Image 1 (cartoon, rainbow, N blue to C red):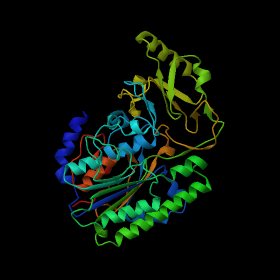
Image 2 (tube, rainbow, N blue to C red; image 1 turned 90 degrees about the horizontal axis):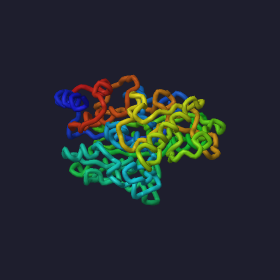
Image 3 (cartoon, rainbow, N blue to C red; image 1 turned 60 degrees about the horizontal axis):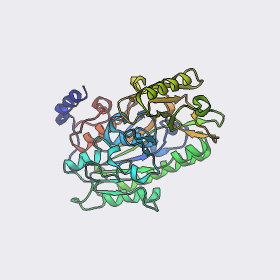
Image 4 (tube, one colour; image 1 turned 60 degrees about the vertical axis):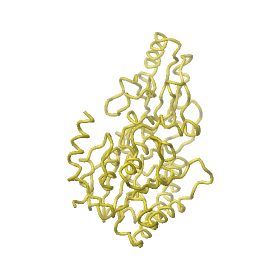
Length: 402
């Protein structure tokens, strides 16, 4: 069915595409920026983007975590299809642990399926510059972005220096200038985790990012090509408040059952694999013990609700446990603060989306799935998309007609 939809979309592409070789697209991701932060805090530039361009909310993929959703934004695929199913999980083929502190695993292209937008663009003759985006420093399909930075190389660029990189790229000569520039920023996520979404520290972080983006856009518009730049500011997920008392401990519930658990929101639980019969019995026991636990839903992998799109990949746990909003699964003491990863049905997990530029309409667009951002970017760049889970109908009201 996905291939049929893609073929229909490709047939319409020559009509829908709006970009020319003279346009450029800059995408900035502000990690953990809730869709409603501009309603809570003083954000004059985000408000300007809404007044002059397009404003909407992005519905993240499950789990609403940073790495899976940044790679979904880049590929248009849900985590069960691109393979980066969480920030941490077990590779069931090897038994090795994938996590963000394991540099070798984090750079292994086997965990980065699909085709990210920078490779789609380069394959069709465009140039790209991608800074700190999940997957951009991984050799996917034997290729890197034309310009990129290794996230693990220290010191990392400051947020201000990352903005300077955007300007440097746009100031290159025409034949070296990238048509697509993407930059990851770690705020307001960092402040949201440490202090919670309603804190004054998070307010300051949001307002700082608004000022930083406003300054960057002002610098872009002063360039000779300023009127040819589509400028998009978005996020990967939202943020919810978690009280230190709102935790569910797995160990007392599962006792001596042979299992390994990864993550706290959600939790991927893997039963031991001594033999098939014991494995199935352990999975059944885990599910039985987690049924009826307050503030927790747990399913066998194959029974995860379809709307979460979290069953098809081999690295997904035998049991997937999802706490209610504001709760975490953790066996150690926790501090109060912010958390994400929850069911995207909670609007607290929705992310901000703003866009302004020559190919962007002035519109208030209903919330849409973040996998359709890939489709939007392909359209703005004038390129044919790879197979993806997005939908042109989600984003066509954003794009100006030729």
